[in-house]
Image (cartoon, rainbow, N blue to C red; front, side, top):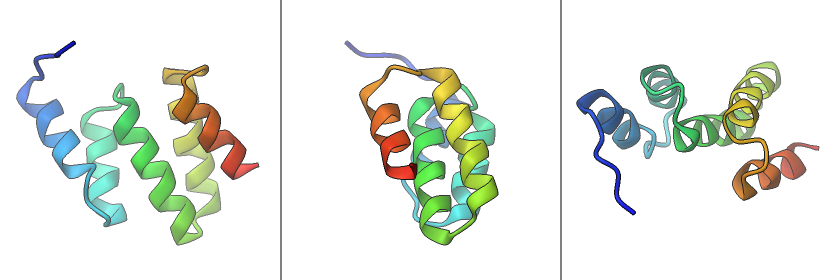
Length: 79
């Protein structure tokens, strides 16, 4: 199905497609309840070597959807 997004969440999702960690941090703050934003931030932080911040972002994703396939895949990659 489709979901109508508010402007802030729409901007956050757009920003979460960026490769820059700074923009992904902003996206995750704008939409803290959006799994895509949290997973994209986690991935970028992991690739940058920011281990502590990666764990924090991963925890936010797990809190949102602990049994979602993408969260389970992320957890396996971080293990």
